[in-house]
Length: 483
Image (cartoon, rainbow, N blue to C red; front, side):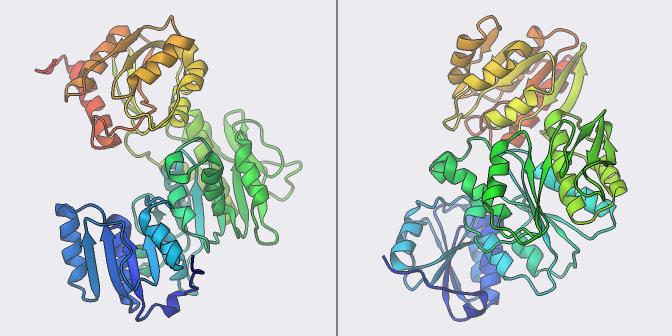
């Protein structure tokens, strides 16, 4: 195996660079590399209509070749690979690159290296769940402080487009996935946060330890604050393992009363005992719990993490309050759809793993739970044990619903379960009708699937849309034709 070549962005003119993947990250990467004078080859395993349109757009630049339908073969002469998120380290392309001594950067690594000397600092967020909400809360708080900012990264806005764009920013709120962090060894954020750690994407990382280590990269080189979750000791362990700049502090957030160098909750008030003059004896009020939308426990934790990063950047307390009040969550995240016959219907289709589903289930007292989909190797015993006392009933949908059903049989045998053995377009409407039959006034019918959606729906958004449509049909008394 050859030793990796050492390259910098200043060395890329005339170099042969391969971009792994198209889409939101790959297209900007190819453009940026071509702008640096590199000869670019883009490889993509899928050859579809969208990919062909993107390929035509890139090849029109000149100096860019796109190879569709083969993402495994290393193009001849490649001196650097820039990869989009999601490509496994074990992919044949990267194994061939390692054998040839070709370095691999992620699109985030490329963006970091391309920053100008006066580039805005990054406030970075990762975690198994809550990343997007926290980053958007953070951006709202920064905006309330009068700062020019944007929520970027894994949230869907390419960091390359932001770094190379003309818009001047004071600071960036950056969401980073474990995939992105894996390929971003040079990243050094102003401050970073790991919200939580739970088993996810283990097929990509290979183990929980490797997954956690990639999440922990967000702390490397932090300048001011490493924000961790007091309730999740693994996140604090990552802080301890990080090599940070002198003076960088560990800042915890907790749903309980905070200790020194922590943010927490006291009598329904979000308070700061980290960024105050005398943190041993004083606390600064930031906002009320009612300022957080929705005020579910996991979302209050998100708000505290966002507040910690904002306070690390010097944002005043009033901006934390005003930003949280102005923030509106994205759809399908503990979203109240309607009340029907005294029963609340809540869409948390974004709860695509057991950790997210647990947070959602913890937010309500009496629940009829709609669950199921693609389990992605997950097990459900711990989730059922923790939630059994809250369950009025369960409606199971999707390809791996039997796994949840078996856990319910083991740990909540007295809870009524409806097993819907159908995956057609009317399945969600049937699930909502069955849930309505099980629910009593004061209950919550909660779509928190704990599974991915692709067995029945294009994505979690479409699954949530189907749930909302079924609830509105129920409220109006309409009965779908395919019942």
